[in-house]
Image (tube, rainbow over all chains, first blue to last red; front, side, top):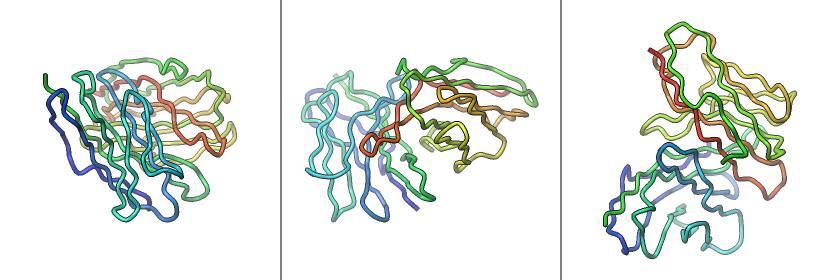
Length: 115
Length: 114
């Protein structure tokens, strides 16, 4: 079965420092990978996706993610964190079991950016 | 995302009551999903529908039922609510185009069963 793991419940970073939120995946076949962000009292917002092509994917709000096939990872990164980046981040993988296309989510990582 | 609307946004109900959560979308997508979010567990899929005549169980469908009344509407029902169904529920949509694989989410319904 397809799955993703987010090994950190919470990541703390100082404003202006680079941030990384980790995600590893387990899939059969080619992975379709996604990052979503959830701000307080809001729904999930799509940040970026990897389907094929360049291993470095750029997304919304200055975020990017690096696909690494050998390490089965898809870590989310940002060169300089903002306090407003504080939110809950979810990694997801596409699951096509049974011919149906659906997303399987990780448990989420809470990012706290301190002034 | 304002294109995916969930009602109600918050609901407190008693154990044993029937409750319906509604979702409508203006994105024109054919696929719709219901997820529940619990702390530390992420989002888990309850049901999904790829068109009006297609309904499928997700990983945690027990205790829930759904209805796809139209392409734009997908309702989730709890026939007899129980406290462990207290959670944040999300409706999502996606398009069947080959590259448009991301899902778009509503703002969620916070359900409390007492």
